[in-house]
Image (spheres, rainbow, N blue to C red):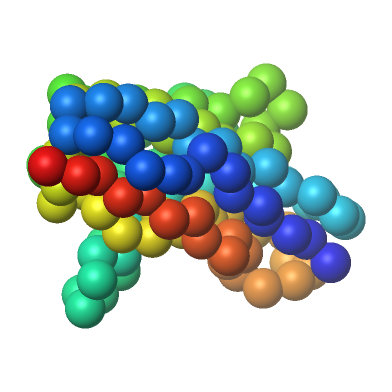
Length: 119
């Protein structure tokens, strides 16, 4: 059983920074893409950023130039550095990992971490 555990959320003033972490534990196979989704209050979950095993990244237009996604060398921890935060960045951030093994589900999800940006 693979678990993804997020940390690093919290309350910050507009213009501030937070760093989210998501660590995989359990019977880990291989993850292809890892990334983060954002769910604002009352809205659908939206992709924020993703990173491949090879280090190729993709960002939502709304966070380009402000957020940076990275992975550790073992490729089982993904980070999201969030700078110049805005009130509209408020919400729950979920990490995910796409499973490249034929065993287990195609995607794992974390439980989410709350980010609140005050104006």
